[in-house]
Image (cartoon, rainbow, N blue to C red; front, side, top):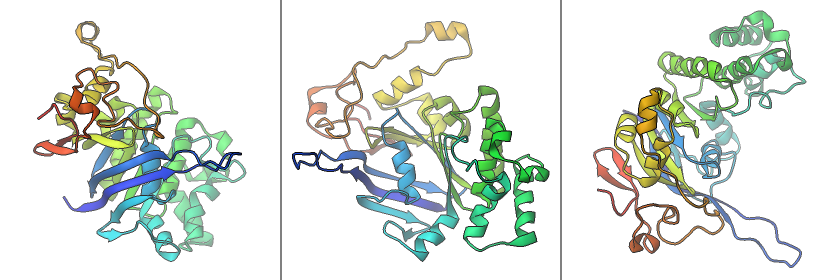
Length: 323
């Protein structure tokens, strides 16, 4: 598989303003040394609890936030510090589908204006050509082109997310970062949007970085899955391998929380309940970041940070006790 995106020890730290005493607060380590690659036509699912740094990582890939350290390489080119015309060119190849379709569209613009905005901004179409492109994009996502003159409030949540996807497709990108794209939708609509994304991947050769806290959704759409905890990747593996035999205790706890369709199996399964709260990213614990909540932690876990190692072919985990 040809590599499209690679992150190498990527970090994003936020520093707040000084308080009235002139003291600057501790930096928030939202992303703390993340490395992985994403291939062409591949979907990498990124999962973890709220506040673990998933969305910040996605924003860093799009250069919506500035990395503090590390590298972002797109098609082999370092784009960590690009600006101006180079950053503008990158935005044509990397687009985003946001979480909330209700706030992602400008209520003062017609949906045709919103969908066609990337084409106008990059000078790719005007006049009749622009109207034709907008109509084709609407039909691609299952909406009639005649509705281009309507406003976002006239559409349902699922239809608005289709419009957001149409806007992301306007520039014919190679990579789309999907930040919780179905979490705000009804369960009955989620599968439609997921199937639409999978269809476009086959037709257009797209790659997805799919961010979600819902492992059931990630299992449906992803080829590989990365598990994130407190700004770090703690496990990375092909989808089936990870769900069949997770190696990190945190991944095991997440998978144990997925509801099973069989009520008998659901009653018999052992649920792993994690104690304690997610540590603050301003003051991560020493050693393994998960040791404060890990049910199998040993003294070594409190002192030594476990590296992300390839425990089995293609299966990476950051745990001292798993091999």
